[in-house]
Length: 191
Image 1 (tube, one colour):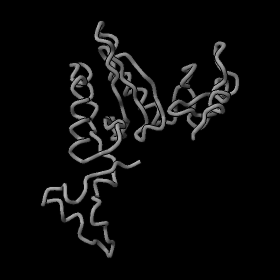
Image 2: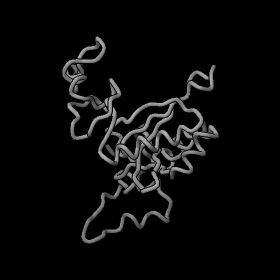
Image 3: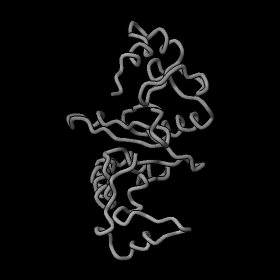
C-alpha cells in the first residue's frame, strides 16, 4: 500500500525537480513521488538498545506523526525498523501499557515487510539482546510458532493468519484446547 502523498502544489520549490520527465517517463502533474513509497525510520541495533533501555520509545509516536505529516503519508502503519549487526532490517512497534506498572510496555518485532510476526515481548533490561537473537534466528531460517512458541524452520510453516505463522500441529489441530488456526482462518471474511 502506498499513501496519498502530497500534491505538487504542496511541495517546497526545491522538490519540484522530481516532476521533470526522466527517461521519457512523464509523471502526473498533481501527484508527487512521495505517494509512491512507504517512509520509515531505521535505527541500528545500538540505537535500538538506547531507545528501549532508556524508555525513549515513549517519544516515537510523535516522531511517527511528524514523518506522516512531512511526507503526506496516508496510512497509520508502522514506520519503525531496526537493523542488526549485518544490516538485516526488522520492523518493530511499541505498545504502551496503562502506565500503572513500568513492566506493561511491550515491543513487537516483525520481518522487514511486517508480514511475519516474530513475537511480542515485555520491555525489560537486556530486551535488545533477546530481540537480536530472535532476529538472527529468523535470518538463519528459523522462527517460533505464533501459538505454541516451538522453534521451527521457516520452510515448515504450515499456515499463516495475518502476521502469525504456525507449525503443522497448531495449524491443523490447535493447541491446548484451542481451535485449529486453519479453522479460524477459514472463517475469516476478506470482503
